[in-house]
Image 1 (cartoon, rainbow, N blue to C red):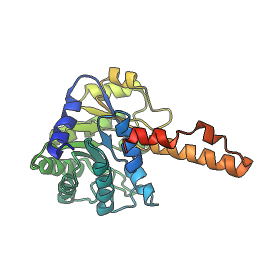
Image 2 (cartoon, rainbow, N blue to C red; image 1 turned 30 degrees about the vertical axis):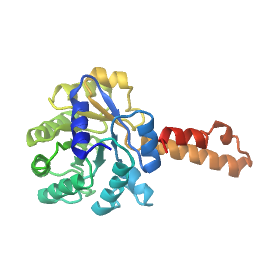
Image 3 (cartoon, one colour; image 1 turned 60 degrees about the horizontal axis):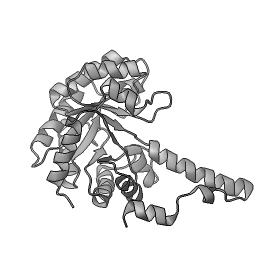
Image 4 (cartoon, helix red, strand yellow; image 1 turned 180 degrees about the vertical axis):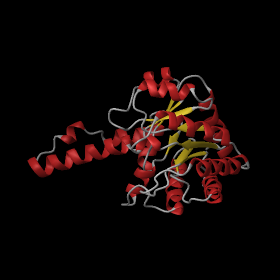
Length: 273
């Protein structure tokens, strides 16, 4: 097994090499091992998928629960793992900084911090506070004994009356505050993706998973994207397969899904167990 320092160095190198790489999002040990066995070079948790494994909604688990879950992914594979740590589990910059330190302690080599406040009345943190939160997280990351890739997420496009211009303004502020990767879910089209990528100097992470707003690896790479994450996409695909099998059983009393399913031997081989 590689050390956390070796994993961190490899993770940074993935962002620095030409082209884009896909960082898929497992939700448990099995999915993590399958993705590793299929050749992916890094993994990332999804806050929603992680919460669902505990029977909770996105945002419904504590920092301790999120990091304990991330630890299971870290321990399952010999790959760099980044975590979706939502808003950092607190409003104040020092809380976010402490989240970074605790994330590193469980073996993570990166994480994302978003500017979604969780308050329905004021869903986004004021840009000044949002930037201070990223600055505190970046300072905590720089103080670690290994390179830790901090990703800052601008969430304005997920709410009404938003604009790509505001997204760019936020991402540029987070870049200046020390974020090493930038992220903005909800970009409406590939032209907007290209505009955002050309407006920043740090690597941009595009999130696949929104219907009508997900594009191919080739399109994203040509637009300037360096990292492609999948959010809950694979988790939802797996659950769709499960639901289809259950509905076939309950509605028809049939089992044709067995003929379409991977064998236990195939799964064991991919997982390397």
